[in-house]
Image (tube, rainbow, N blue to C red; front, side, top):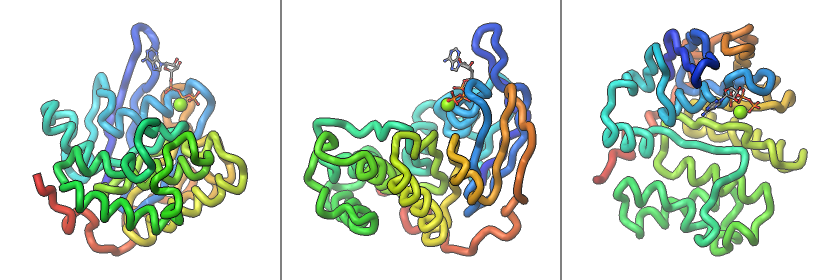
Length: 241
Ligand SMILES: Nc1ncnc2c1ncn2[C@@H]1O[C@H](COP(=O)(O)OP(=O)(O)OP(=O)(O)O)[C@@H](O)[C@H]1O
Ligand SMILES: [Mg+2]
């Protein structure tokens, strides 16, 4: 699902990534750990097409995204990737439901359909009661779950999360972590999660340790061969625009 080959990246004279090779299979939940400044976020941003590598190739679901033009890339990102950040990044002036709908509306889904799907997701995440509240009226855990719902609305194949539970207390943290595995089991999505949380990295299928811009070691085996059999979540969600 994700194939990185010889990824390097420098900011000025600072070489942040020094040749990363990584393959992640469909339905895998992988964590990326390592000291602050090791290059984890940079790597995730490159994986998520939000940044470009200096060298190397990024294949997502068989597509070389480094070759896509801006418009195609934006479309690919919107439809195939979901992002969850440390601080939810919900839009404050919109309700929870509206926030969840936004990526679907960008993809050209009708308001009616987007709202229906958003309601289903909020229901699944036990957030129906909070649908019409704005972010300021939601708890930290609720906001993160809304952010997950927003990441899921276009049925992306890949979810990328950067310290998604970093701002949560232990109970909300555990619930959010469990949610990732439930979603993988239900929809077969692939998760790549940058985290400083040991409890989370211990339960992921594989833990990639990054140190000084290189893969230091990997714990766990590549689950690509035994990836869970699920229907392709993308096929029944062919873009309507
Ligand atoms: N846009 C940028 N311009 C210049 N330097 C950058 C930029 N982005 C990141 N860096 C530097 O690259 C290095 C790696 O940053 P990165 O954000 O990938 O680290 P990280 O492993 O995610 O750390 P943390 O655990 O603290 O989030 C750091 O030294 C950082 O200061
Ligand atoms: Mg980071």
